[in-house]
Image (cartoon, rainbow, N blue to C red; front, top):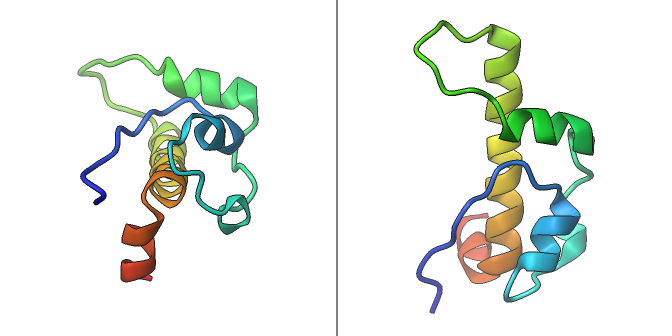
Length: 84
């Protein structure tokens, strides 16, 4: 039974796949949206109360979606099949 997963930002899809426990179908996940340098930048994005730039928000949002999608498809493929 799938009970949950931990979503890590700052990792590319290959790293997420290699860390996954169930090894869902690698071809189910598209090519990474960002290169490793951009992923490192997003991973280390500062937490502050200052207004975030819209481009930074969009990149963090896209990467968050991408990391969640890859993590769920690789670790909980049964959940993803139910919801597609």
